Length: 565
Image (cartoon, rainbow, N blue to C red; front, side, top):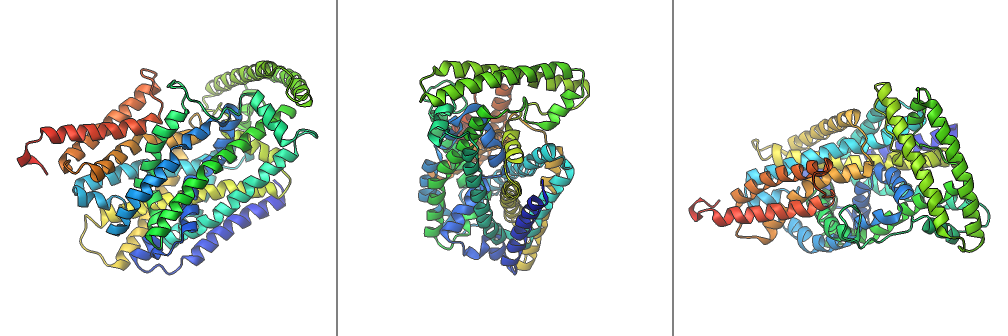
């Protein structure tokens, strides 16, 4: 990184923090601090909702996901527009009418305090973990690529977020996220244009798509019912709809974004705006990853994109084997480049099977490299991340973009981390304050509640930094966040659906069913992880929701009427 990159990076981040702190100064009461004074317009709500979901993981992991597996991941979001319509018709009118601060307040009115508290605690567990991961994800990748100290990065990102979130609450989060999304969109569009411009002369965008298609990267839709395929049209529409319903309808980090709306109409339009724009946005980010793949068909790529992993194996007894793989990879690259040049110069008349053969050969060499990296790490008692999906895009940025733009793209990544984390801390503090602290203590003044909210925000910020400092990488960071959500979301959504549509079901039945369901869902996840059953994590949202509804109805049906509560 050059001086100009540092100026752009530091300047962008400081401006966001200072602006958010300044614009949200003077929050004197709970309504101002936790609901932003109900002044947000629909575009602020829509962008804030998008920024909350689009963490740094989105902009680091999603292009890497597309680089390796193609466009199929976009199916994960197919249920989102359906969920937005249901939320606008059912959830938002109810929350607005009850004037709630959190989604879980409604559950006490419908059931009882223990059900409200249990659901709030489930949210706090999963979102507390997720907040740590949204800090950890960019920190570990930037640490590996730039050589920055990992713990220091975790603390810096966390502290920057804490400053304006503690200071201004929900309004600070909303106003900063609006500008963070501008930075994010600008950076990603510039990156996309530069990738296209860096392709060889004569390789138009259309030909780039042909090359990606010949390599199997443009297969968007999978209509199979094969559970071994994690992302299909059916898992997106069914599992994705349930996940999005739970996330946007019951997760306080999202609910709080639209509860700050100026009116019911502003809330609903903001959510529909998100529903219309989110899928195209994810499609575009995946397309950026596919174009990075095309770029590396004409430019040599490392055997593994994680520089730390390469350093470990090259300083081990496996260095010669690794160098041999690097030589073979170079040979495969040169032969594949010749085939792709012929393919692009003959308007796709070359047999795509040859491209597939060379891609498979390259993938095989990369798999062998990952095995050597793990062996090298084990020989040194080091935990080394061999899966390099999350490092693909950042490697491209640092090695191919001009000065100044590197700083801008790093600002995009860190802005995304800050936007998601600020929403999560804000929601964690709101839930702790309103659902646990206020409900279980004597009546407090507005000033005391605002002070408590600030302290809870600070406390959860410290917890998130702590989680980030002890976290470990999964196969892919964006999947890790969604896995954590899927373990809890189905159960929580089921509780809300019982509250909305199953009027005969009472509190004790729901509370008992929720406890049983959470244990069962965790058990199903572990059984899948140990390959005892085959149930991809996305289906846990549907299964968890179904289980809690069925169990609650069964318990209620066998409960004597005199015992019903």
